[in-house]
Image (cartoon, rainbow, N blue to C red; front, side):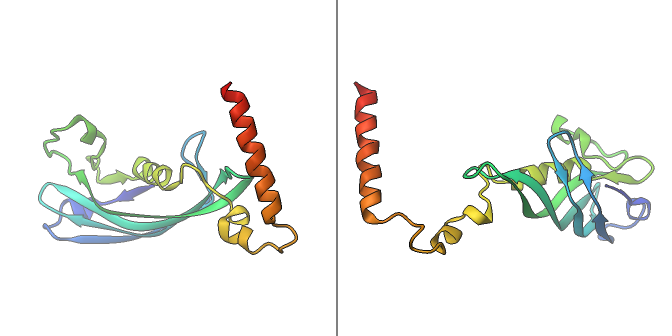
Length: 165
């Protein structure tokens, strides 16, 4: 996801550039593949860097922790004011060394987008089929009644007591 910002780099402070991200299937690494990337991105020139903001939607395949089935999860990420240093600007921190606009005016957002998507995926994703609202909508004959719950509670307490001995 590279963007050409050569006019922005040489432009005055406050100049903005708007881009629309619309990319098909993308593999970021061996663990993360998304079906698409769509959304607006804004670049704003400030003193010695470019601020990047935007909203991107995508879907990726994740595994449900309740059923262990794979499902497509919609992910919406929003990022605001991420700074990328302009060519020739002094970079103080080692962490920001990869946040640079190239000398020819190109800016690669691939790693930043990968990080944002990874952070947006829940640690324990639950498929909509197995969410609490979906389970509440099940017919009464499928749900456990009080007697079944009591049996499970007694059984659980018995097993715990035996394992502690």
